[in-house]
Length: 392
Image 1 (tube, rainbow, N blue to C red):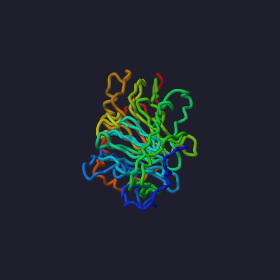
Image 2 (tube, one colour; image 1 turned 180 degrees about the horizontal axis):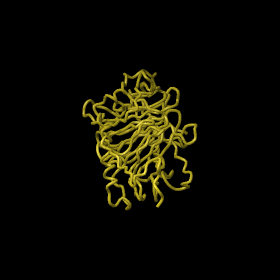
Image 3 (cartoon, one colour; image 1 turned 90 degrees about the vertical axis):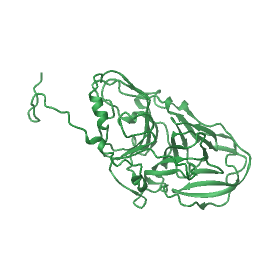
Image 4 (cartoon, rainbow, N blue to C red; image 1 turned 90 degrees about the horizontal axis):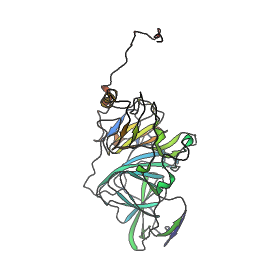
């Protein structure tokens, strides 16, 4: 990656620790987080009107695994901001950010240029880039995943072949943009080892006249995604709708997948079409950008989140289950529309921040959405396990 700058970025004062950001974590151990297999769900956080919070101050960690220092692991954050970044830029030395806005557009200025990112789009800021976020629509909130020691890439398509899922041509990088202004006291906020440091300089970091290379920020419109689904029977694994993946050294096992559940047709016959009940070797953090998620009729709201950890059972709530099995037209094609949910899925077991466990947004009654499930099994002809039914 080559950047043609007006002035080298090295010309700044020494870094100093920034006042502690108590809710930002880069080391996931017993001193910072807790382990729990319990299914967790959070209601959407309100974006406060006061005090003033830009993207940096409004960013907080929910859960994660591993270590930014050891260059292996991930963190899942959320943000709630009410003002634009002014006179400062943010740089993450720990890893890549994948940002999912849910409310309010983000105007992101990077060293490679500007990007306007709307809800329904995502943006990836690779490790080391300096950027600033303005809020053209006012208060904004959303989700952020961060990966340590690797980068996001497109998943291997395997038997799908050349076409499907996210197409490389739909990922957009910015056009070079620069400002040549004297900015005394301009602050660089540097995230390093999960901690924040600041350094001042007298010019804007967005002074790149031209660039070339392929290590750049980029955005993607999720409506451009071509989803795949079963067309005869049974329910496919949700990983078939992976937009981006951060792989591990073990083939087929991801450090973090970004998976979406977009509008699509459901056509499987003699099949329970919502996501089935399951336990999983992966841990799943879900968010909802808009609409109603197909497996949760109640309680899972846009801007909210849920976490189902490794081998903890989960699936549709009672209301969704009963409505599905009672449909007279269950085999008719049905277009799922007006919804967009996503999942950050990891092979590493997450530890949860204590403020997330103690949050007033946490739904302590989440488990009750399954309590009403009842058995619909019956022995049609009185057969037992040791006495199989006769063939017709």
